[in-house]
Image 1 (tube, rainbow, N blue to C red):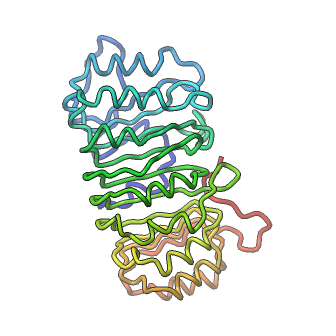
Image 2: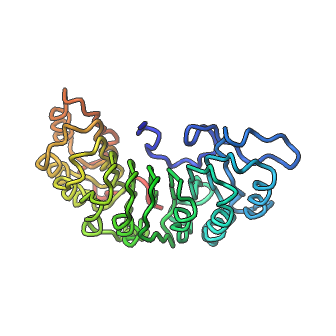
Image 3: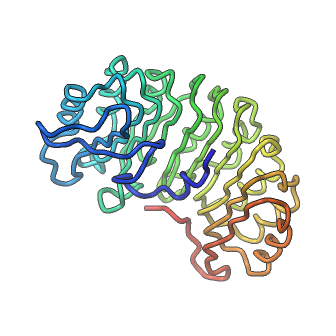
Length: 318
């Protein structure tokens, strides 16, 4: 798996590639369309001044595109996303699941900060997406406000990512209580309590046990104001022994959390250890670098913030 594809994905996925396919938006009525199965389709309307509703655009999508071939969909703005939640678009997707049998990758809420700040994006219950698409392999959701996720069993999901400035504890617990036998990549941006990120280390227990995640090779528990506590829990977590990649990045990681990682179970089996955006001292950074030098572990300790500063902050909050 190419882990770099997921690094700090805070853009709006307007261009480039998604799920290995070139991103294309809906073209004006009458204009030639890209090949349905060779495109990652971005459906989005202007957040503040939309000329059409996302429901209208979606209707145009299913009427003009050979949806049976569509493999990847990116949902951007659905209007005033800071006031309207994602329930309607979740409903539209699930009600049209039979018309999207090839869908394997879905990103819900791909908006840049200029469109809607991440913690202003109003989500909804996204569990129906997994229930309606049993063959989905990749689900990514941006925004934690009003976000609901219920425990679910899904046989084919390989990638699950929740990007948030504050991820509700109930969502974290539900992920841990889900049976996801094919899941290889799990990434949770825990966030800060100021924006609803109320998860504690206790809420991570089921994830850290790894019992319901037998295929997991990457775990990212990041962007957290309690990053030191998370690191201490990860240091003795059973799931870590079979990981290839571990991310404790984007948060308020200090020497205390780094010491816990160094004092815990060996991490030299990892291909990658991502600690970027941190508040560790230079001495600790040098110690980590020396520890993993020659081990084959790709260590990222970039974006060192001021360890002794009065204000410590996560990478993505508002």
